[in-house]
Length: 203
Image (cartoon, rainbow, N blue to C red; front, side, top):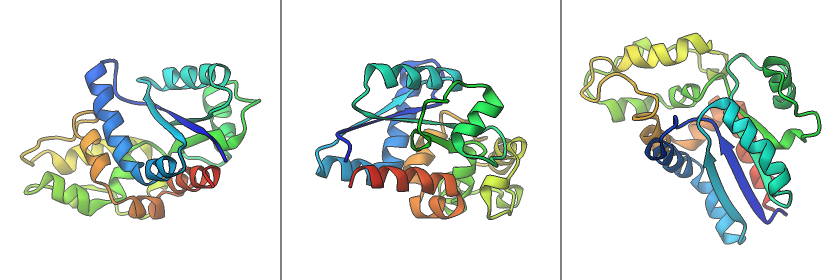
């Protein structure tokens, strides 16, 4: 059993307040894991890193600076995934993670927006009147929705709502906190893998 979990996540832009908002959103989305950690007195920390490259850099630094913690990298896949997460990041980004166990690498496939699309009902409730769900791809396998469709489809679906067009930082942070985790885990195998891996590490 691990004694500390540190999750390095892509997102939040470059400002402290936007990173804080995304951290709160992810903290709520991952609250079931956080609660297990608290019960087992496992230290738990979510670090929002800004850019994808920064997330990788912070994660690599953490492997050296916090060797006794279970350090986790969570980034957008940015493409279909046909290999293990570590292999995907090596092949797509040429990241040097040859000495990293695959349990440490996790992906939002193909981007975080796939997790949002996995729970259409929450999107409808959040955006309210004017939300056009027919603009969202109907593929239940959200990880196979092309990255180029994800954010544009959300923007198209939300353009005529009171909250306005989907905004990655302003809206995603709030949506993450509202998502039904079970729906996302069922629709996105790599999300389920994140939960399963961390649960196993805490028992």
